[in-house]
Length: 463
Ligand code: FAD
Picture 1 (tube, rainbow, N blue to C red):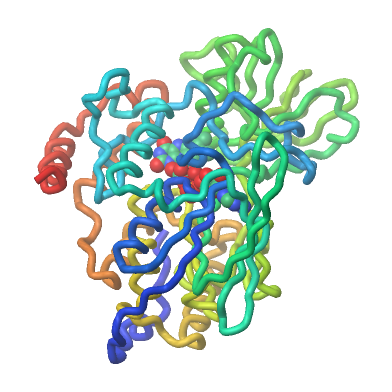
Picture 2 (cartoon, rainbow, N blue to C red):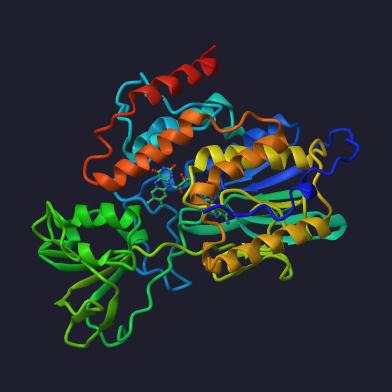
């Protein structure tokens, strides 16, 4: 998807460079994005505090068997579990592509580590811990501290209100004023579920993939899985080992592929659900139907910033967080409010680096931003271009093939090297293998030449 750049001239307005400013910056979240932000902000000379409600770093990579009290995530009073990982999860990107540029994700020599090219989730958490240790990021983090309110105060500063979380109780409230806030709270925690005609009378169970951990509860059951993204693929196969039948339903199944999934005895592909009935039947638009025990929604997530009060300047509308210039700055509140990690269908860690460097440089005044009006015009032109191409609002932050153009735009602004050619080629090669051999792509490949190029490149980080 090529998104037209509405007016490149706006981005290259030259202004006199003021001397670097050191600001006080609050970062919300110590997942991969927050850690990366902390590193780049500190490098730029800012004073950084990272607020993390959990007692460890890693965000979604900190797997937990715990699930939420509402399995579909609709109850606003439910307990919130940050991680959406299932026990069997292995990365869907090769480690060379996935890692930070400043700290490549190479196999560790430490005992007990997972050296596979597409490692299990535990290895990613260990890698993030190594990264945090290497750059002494832990000392910037206030663990067990939840931000419950972020709001504007005078002089365009931000009040960050936090509370200590200990043993399930909340206490020790704290208010602090910062020059800037960088929001890194992740976007895989607030489930989005499919609307299904008749669901109010359907007698079966429903669960969102956010609360899927292991296949055992689905033993001998007939399960309908809604979705076509990586989680739906992985979870269907995981469950099929114990379930009686697994029926995958999605918008994107081609007519010719409907029916039994090749290589599997108990997985079927269907078109969308037409409706469900009180006798337990699930009817699909292709005319088939099954009597199912469970519907598992692998239908994605909503952006959610329950702590952020901007008086309506930034809002979430049909999963568009906006208006935001380049998915990062609110034109009206720039540079003192920014978001890292909103784009999806991307290589997240390097993207966090590009975004963090730009934000850090803009906050210090080293990198100029266009005027508020110019940023707004650019953002509106971007939204219009999506609309003109028939792209729904909820796909505003889906970058996909356009991601490297986006990364390189940020790199140019920050004076960083562009995305490596091997990384792009490896990303697309992995995607092609995933489509052509979904069962085996994590263990079979033919891009050894790209792996060599990556490791040549990584040498500069160890010298
Ligand atoms: P998170 O990891 O969610 O971290 C956000 C942090 O903010 C958390 O630690 C949370 O506790 C904290 N927080 C939230 N609210 C508050 C608050 N109010 N106060 C204080 N702290 C708060 N990426 C890949 O690169 N490769 C993969 O193979 C891959 N597979 C994935 C599989 C699944 C099932 C999912 C869900 C995601 C996958 N991802 C993958 C994407 C993954 O989300 C990113 O890699 C990355 O971990 C996102 O980091 P983050 O920091 O933006 O968010």
